[in-house]
Image (spheres, rainbow, N blue to C red):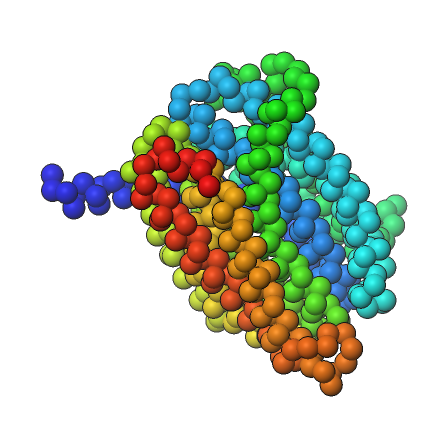
Length: 467
């Protein structure tokens, strides 16, 4: 067989393996995102005021999600490398320490989200704050569940078992829709809680998902040899420290990207109810599109991690290449949907003409950054598979807060004669802020891809876990 034929056959096998592994993760990510979609759609039907409250509360809650995802993302590559190296007997002990870390993280984030309304009240429109407070106080009860759920889910994904993520994620959506509606509007003996009811419903669904995922792992034959729940391990400071050493830079990297979007939402929140609502609709569509490359990135992390654990340097590079190719295809589809269907998407959520028009404009910006958003996500996933975390974290700091946010403020901020809220900027409003997002994502995509290419060109022993 010729060399080119061998390469094509290898790429075809890797594309198939990555696609089969990633497809359930994409569905699972879309299901997680679907909770925000359901909250937003229900809020939009309840009224523009409730929609604006979710538009402020949801980004604040997303900080909690990002911190959980980032820190606990230490689990999949750690498990995948143990699995690839034939050391499955060590996975159970690692998992039990991850549960302790998740519990501590969840309790800390519970306190953080309970206090968030105090900080937000200083610059959010007063008429929106009661709904924001109700939503955050309700959803805060789900913070410990969120952290525990991610630790359980990431264990399954680390051993390349992604179906539970898909099934349990979809089940959460099925439960949230009627529960959110009942608690928001008040059904039968239930009082009308508005935005607070949506937050409480999400928290209840998260606890249900924890129970479902724990039961699935405990009963699964494919996890029986791992001994996940076979014994009780006290917290081990050294083991938890190793997870934090890997997870904190991941958390910083993911937080830098996500917090850029959160900061943008909060800056737009100073402009009034219609911009808040329009941004929430548009960012919802963009975030839903991002769940696809994020799922592919998670699959790429596992494939790269397994190859790295097995000492297969060539396999590491093929796994990343497959992720990039799949991401290019999915992002092309997303860009077309956002560019051509923006107004229609917005009309599914709200019937306010002003909100629909502004949201459709913002979705054009989202269409532009689909490729760079997908590329940075998958390149970051490949680096996580190598446990390469510290330099990528600093790349994200530079890209999102060193460049993206200043450009966003410079283009979108209120000019000197436009008020006292932001005393600088060209005053382009929401479109200017979204242009800043494009800059941040583009720089991150270039630098993270360069980082992976530079590392994967070396001997595998010199790149796995190296910074």
